[in-house]
Structures are given as structure tokens and as C-alpha cells.
Image (cartoon, rainbow, N blue to C red; front, side, top):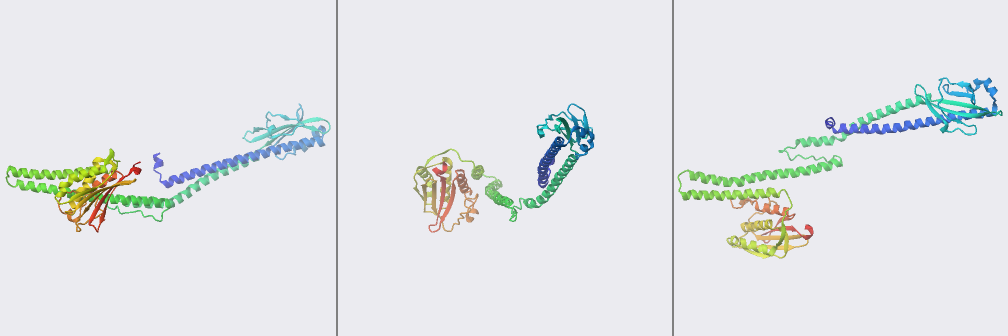
Length: 471
């Protein structure tokens, strides 16, 4: 098996083509050989029967037994094959004419009566010492008007037919070998040319490295089957390149987020250790460090949640949620924080929906917290719901400062914040909206954002599967 596995595909297929051609031509040659052999044997049988019938007619019309005994050479020359056997005798007497150059011994066979035609079933077969078939027949003939009966024994030695069949068999074997060799060679040449696109794919694949993910197969002139395959590979490489870039960006953003609290803790600790401090000053440093460690702990917790969400296992423990009640609870919970920016809530909701309650609350909480953090002071945050057969929708609408940049294409990316806020150290770690999108993906739903320019408002929409989709 290891020997076979080491063969290149073109050698394997060419070899299999040659084997198939050998089997097909061998079967066809065997069929033709058997057919020719049967045809020759049938022709020999009828020729032998015809000759014996000719003797029977000749005896009945022209001769009596005395004339036959006086001129035996006349009958000896009436059969064409020099190796054939002719024996004539009276019933229960010794033969008076014997032509048997090979001294062949007749097999046991029935004697065809005078009044019965000779059939193929009356013939018997024997073989010579060199394996040549001999066909035998014995029949009775009426001699003239004397009512004497002559027993005719004749045999046909298939020497010429055996030579012809042997020559034919050698030609069939030669044809099989030649066909197998030609088929293998032609298949190898065709496959070598036909598999060139695969060699091109191999060379292109060898060029792809982590630093050269932009290489594409791009085989527009390949056969349709390979063209669709290379298109699928190129699409896969697009996704891998995008994912690799996303991973690199994620690593850079994570390092950026973790570096800030670490630098703060190191700076505070180094300043505190430069001279002796009072217990209250040490306590203040420790409290600040604990605050930064808590921030790092939240970042780690959120990253772990996103890593688990990437497995895309369907969310379990979905329950029926009373939407107005839950939105009112959320508005009431965040009301003190919103009041610090002179913001308020307006809840317009109805109906019920199915979702994991803890994740549902976390999703809406993140949107509300984002609206408070980046919303325009003195405005109203609207929490609304809508229900159709295919989707249950939750919307969070807030107004914002027109100078605040909103990139709707990247706003759900991990660690994404606006350019201005990115350089500012805030409580936000840039993972809240990524968690929103991850939770919606687990619910087989979607999270989207729309920009209402005329109203300077941004609308975050959560679309959960409705009744007909959940079924």
C-alpha cells in the first residue's frame, strides 16, 4: 500500500487505464477466440457429416461390395485431408479399406442406422498425442441392390484448425499487450498535460505563508471543475487573510488596553516607593491598583466570553421574556447614571419574545450604557420593541453630538472606539458592542446600527428570530 501511495496521480490513473484496457481487450479477445473456435468446430462437423453422407449415397447408387474390394484406392482418395481417417467394413467383420495414417484409435460411439440422417450429436471427440482434436462418426450404408450394409467410420483431424487457432491466440495476446501499453502511454501523456493546472495550484499554494496571505490562485483559464475549486480556495484565503488581520489587530488592541492600566499601576507604585509614605497614602495607591486590576479583570472576562461565543454553539435556556417589564427595569436601573448627563428614558414596548434572559439583559444593558456614554447630554434615550412573525426587534435610539465620528462598518469590532476617544483613557474597554453582536449571533439574530443624519441620532437594532423562524 505504501508503494501505491508513493505513486503520483498520473502514474496511478495511467496504470489503471492500462489495466482496464487490458481487461476489456482480453475479454473481447477471449470472446472472439471462443467464437472462432466454435465456428471452426461446427464447420468441421458438418464437413465430416457431408462426406460420410456422400459415401452413403455413393454406395447405394453405384457399387457392390465386390467392386469396392477390387478398387480400394478409389475411396482412399475421396477425402481431402491426408491425416483424416476412413474405414469401411462389413458389419461384424474386419475392415476391407483402412486409411488411418496416424493409427488413431476410434472412441466409443453409436452407429447411425441406414434410415437415419447423421446429426452432430452422433459425433465424438478424441485427441491425438500432440493435443489435436479429432472428430469421429460411424454410420451404416446400404450397398446397391444387394442389401449388404457397410459400416463407415470417418474422422477429421483438426490439425490445420489447431494451427489457425494457435496463431489467432498469439495475435489476440499481442493485441492485448500492445493495447495495454499504448493505452497506458497515451493516458500518461494526456494526464500529464491535463494535470498541469494542479501543478500550478501546488506551486501557488507553496507561495502562501503567514506573511504572504495575499497570494491567490486566480486560475481563470483552468477547467470548470478546477476553476470552481480555486475560486473556493481563493474565497477561503480571503476569509483567512481577513481573520489573520483581525487577529493581529485584536492582539495589538489587547496589548494597548492592557498596557495602560499596567503602566498606571507601575507609575503609581514607583512614585510611592521613592520615599516613605503614610499608611493613608499607601492605602490610596493600593485602592487605585485594585481599580486598575478590576478593569483588567473585566477585559479578561469579556475576552473569554467572546472566545466562547466564537464557537457559535446555539444558545440554550431560552425563556419567554416580557419585553415592556424588562425594558422598564433596565431604564430604572440606568436612570441615576443617565441623570448625571441630564438624560432620560422613553420606553415604548409591548409583547413577549424568547431569548436567554441573562444574555438578553446584557445585550440591552450594553446598548443603553453606550447610549449614555456617547449620547448628547439633555436628550432622551428611546427604548422600543416591535414584533412580527419572523422577527422580534429591540431598538435603542439616542441623539449624539454631530462632531462625534460614527463608523457604522466597524462599530461592532472588538476594541473599536472613535478616533478621538481611542486616545483617551476611559472606563470603556471597547468590547461592549462586540459582545452585543456575539450574543445576537448565538441567538441566530443580528445586531445593526443606523445613522439618522437629520436628527443627529443613532439607532441600534437587535433582531431576534420570530416564531416562524424558531420552528
